[in-house]
Image (cartoon, rainbow over all chains, first blue to last red):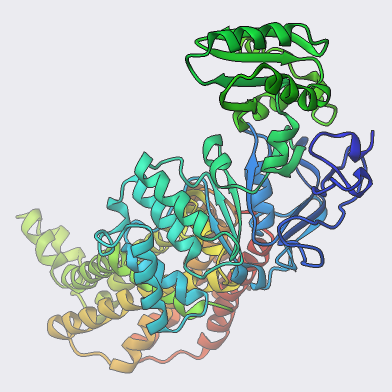
Length: 374
Length: 255
């Protein structure tokens, strides 16, 4: 199998559509330049080659080849124990790779001379700070550790406190903060130095809906100015803010692709047709016309909504619109059903024993069937 | 040593905010006050308790200023060492365990600065506490017995401080090698036992931290001490070696 055989993993051999540049150690492929967000010639913010980590006999991460375009918001997904946190710890220099190499913003991850730490921000999945310290003191200390002089550090601290909504609690000891407030403070300390690359490990896990929305807004505001690597289980958040997504399972990369491409690639072979109400004759003509088409596998009408299950979307797509036009039915909407990121995630992760061999044709043909199987 | 100044500031602030500095200083102060008092009034106490058993009272010699110094050194070496171990046992292991070490080490600070700031802060707390104890001990000794040479008494306190720093540094090494404060303390106690055994040996014994009490007593009583330079140099070397080994271990450690 070559990288081009893998859905969502199209190396340069995959032709013009080859936007992603990921390969797995299992395939022995090598990373190729991106033509993603950063554009040709722009070095990736993160680049790993064969990066791996073993803890004794346990392989936490196996041969990860990954390139994250500069300026992107990169969703890092996977079930518990998939290797996400290990990857982030390797990239931030907190852990040492047992194989492979990597760079973050052009700096080798094992440099150990502080250059990497000056360019990054990092939020741990369970952020812990000094309980005796005040929120504002912690942020100011971090700002000064990053080299900001006193006045500038205080100004930036005030700015960040405002941004993360902790102005009122700035003078309180961190030991009195709720877990949500600690999470906000964690995000604050991660962005206080205006990092080039921001690693966020479960940044919204302790937040209420309002806090979650605020944090996602902060992340969105960083788009284009910083590269954000967002590890989370909340897939709707990833779907909302991320440009690209990588899914890990059992320490291996399952897939990496731009979000749109990923969802498009896994689009179900179903079209949803929503006619305007009050046209029963036209609707009858339409259902009759569709039933006579060789590419239609099944047809359902529920509450005035038509669902057309097709055998091959490549054939059905171009053929469907002329049929619709011929019946004279007026449409409120017409779309090919797209799966949510959660659908894609669950489908890919459920096949964890063969992460690199999945193809779109292995998807259940019927959405109801898919729902039952999940 | 990138970030050392800021980290030291943070460590010193932590010593005061968590009350560690005050608690240790108060405990040291209490021992410093109690030591000359005990030396002075122990015979009277025994006499009062013994009642008519005059023969027992006669066995207790008249207290001298030397007894006050001995009592001071005995109390502060015994309890001071335990406090030094308590101070150092969780300083690195605790931060690794709580996750605050990971938070700091993703900032542009060197691991050497991270460790050095902690060791210097612990040494600072012990220094302030020993100084407080020294001032109070000197005053009470002067009031209850006789004034001693101030420089000699200060030299005694300096040697006492050095011996405590050595045990703190050895425990600090233990705390760096492990991820548990209890294990760090265990290693500190192990070093205490080992140096205690070694101090009984004729050749190397005088160079162990426990044995600094000998020249310290002589200096306090104005008797001078010819054999202080070697033990001081060795103890400084032990403390620096412990710090250096901690750095070597921590340099590649995953937190």
